[in-house]
Image (cartoon, rainbow, N blue to C red; front, side, top):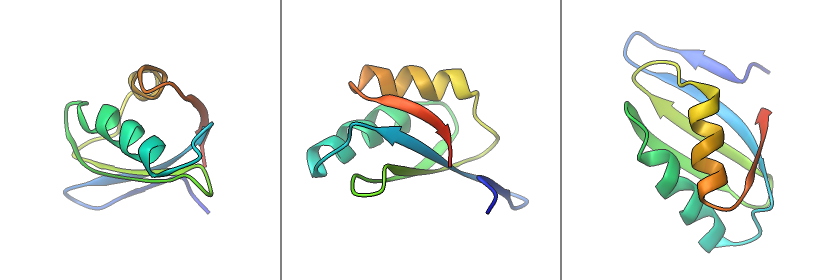
Length: 79
């Protein structure tokens, strides 16, 4: 499975985030990543640690890492 797929208008990337355990955690991570330029949707799943991000262009992984860190969690990498 690839961690990133592209269509003509969007890029979807799945990241692994450690430390999420509930809906509040999912919301915190989603809110921080949603604030990055070009992000159109974020779906975080605490039970798997997967965070699926759809954006207009590939995101800088360090920017995603900083957003996840700001939410209080750790970006492990791409799924």
